[in-house]
Image (cartoon, helix red, strand yellow):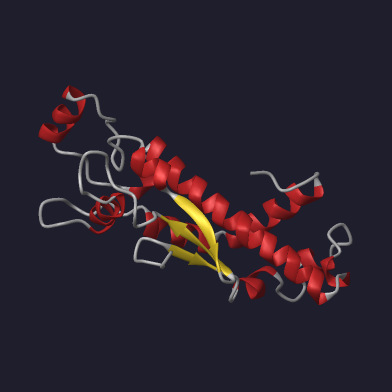
Length: 180
């Protein structure tokens, strides 16, 4: 599957530096013992962490839609559209009318990185409208609809908090396996 504008490539270029800074407890802590591992073992751990990060990002995207995460400061739906959604039994949430868009958010491995996004081949039933097209309209807006960014702010949040996710990953791994 090709990478497109609504997908995020997750690899560890630059992340390793932010995780393993000199003096980092993650290197020197005897509990984790990463400094004693051979490079091939470190790479195996990094690869597992990359998948963990992709999974966590997918979950965070879905959670932000389901909870209507207020810090995203999306412009509210128009009253007319809210009434329409209610009348035809659609979800009142922004980014969600049916569950198809939310259910389409996925991740997969491509070469040496993971891609998080919406596959380009999924269409809404009984129409020729691609779910990816709707997601792009939501993310970037149109001349008829304001942008309601989800992927961009989530990417920035994950980048700022990669060290926190690394620590959670290690804790999960030490307690009997990485939880998903």
